[in-house]
Length: 197
Image 1 (cartoon, one colour):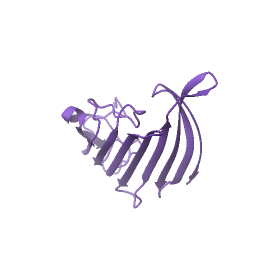
Image 2 (image 1 turned 120 degrees about the vertical axis):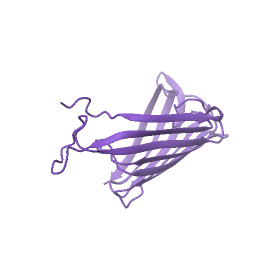
Image 3 (image 1 turned 45 degrees about the vertical axis):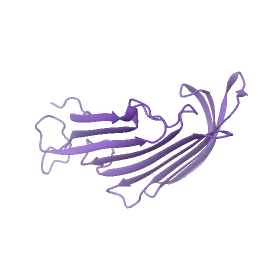
Image 4 (image 1 turned 135 degrees about the vertical axis):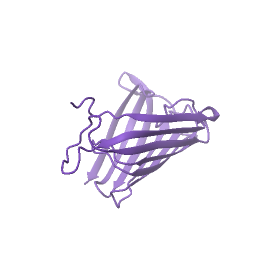
């Protein structure tokens, strides 16, 4: 009988140094469990076929204002000055669900307070074993100084642009404005974009 489908046994190791300046997370998973030759159906029941272990991990270095714990955010809305570099990897066959087998990614997050407000740049590059294309994503935004009212809601405007280049699925882009009311707790977005698949 198959139980807990979609879940996977694993062993994990994680830690941090320098109050969060350096963080590392790594895991080894049981991975795909095949039912045997001639049967393409995946079977997650214990002892059914042979396992393909999956290794995954992430290593992050924060060069400006580090934070303790594992709750890295895409933006700190001006509360921190950020220069963070992250490297993630996955090696082995996962448990299905449309994920990639082997992959590598490198991302950089820069957030700096300037005269006009807080500027954010988030860039990421991905390498997938089964694809000849190396997708990239870029996000740039500027959280403006001063409050702006949208009806009864007061907050700060954050215009942004977003671009994703993926040869396998096509390119996507968007431009928009975020009305930040209460940090990550409350905001309103309006944007316009296009996807060329």
